[in-house]
Image 1 (cartoon, rainbow, N blue to C red):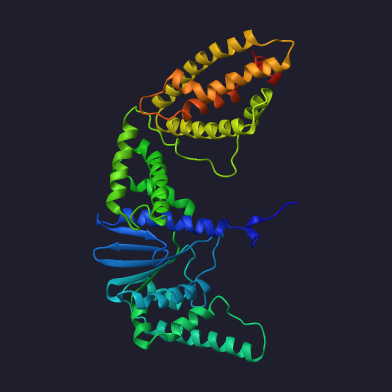
Image 2: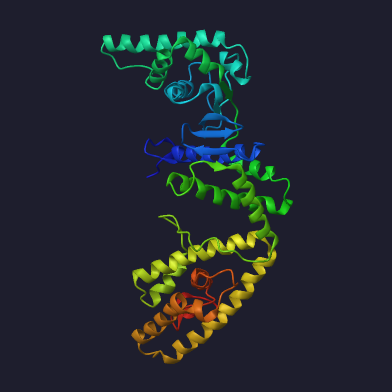
Length: 405
């Protein structure tokens, strides 16, 4: 049965990508600020809270995957949900040092009264009158539906309308004066390229890799901020320091570990050949799980190094030769000791080779580089090589699995 996830009410993709959009957008904005002490927090007082030069900017970000998002106007649900949030925030902030931004990938409706919000300091009196009238209309429609015992209209807009109307006239005017609207914002798939282009002080060949590595670091910092394991706000100077350190590692030939502490997602792909190799020697589920995880770690690490520089890929290739040579000593012993007339004997000897690859090989073979101290790379690289058929566990794995000698 084909299921259209994009239209499923249970699909969490949109909300997950919306949060990721906040992260990515915040990183880009923080880098663009000229205040090195500027900071940002995700999901603090607002979607994004930027603090710079003694002032706060509270941002609501509205993303959409639609090819042509519906234009924003005075009746848009996103406008009224945003006004509700900001109306509720007013009692806990100093509005004199706070401004607000509604950032949306949608365009602005033609001839919209919201156009004045694109320029700070513009006259908003006409918009204020129109917003009050619209909010009153929404509230009246809801009340009429209640009296008629009909389903309530404007379910997405009515909380915002009520919150806006509950503000004193001066509060409405003061809030509106501090709002800026930024329509036609870039979508999430454009942000990484935009970020890479901002890195114009770094060598061109580095920028794509540098952007990817900074994103990985940034995602981690945001997670740690939620867990209370670092400051809630991330400072701009931290980005600059991380950029400098990461660029320096890309300049060197040194291989740096970036996957030993990472775990694959709950559902991840492993080439079926890995399982076939393990099945030939009756590997237990725990051993197969270790093989799969280490293969994921090593495969991604190898890919990252290869992307960084051709010289690093050359190190991988040379080290693979060493791994294969050391494996041959183990596999020769398994072939000699295994009884070709006794499958249990062959499986037992093959299982010993797999155990060696997962448990002892890292210590015996030695690391690919002194900076790589975790055994994950050796364990996982042997699994990568087993998928290719360059190594295997069962004494007769080449014939059994159809590899060419």
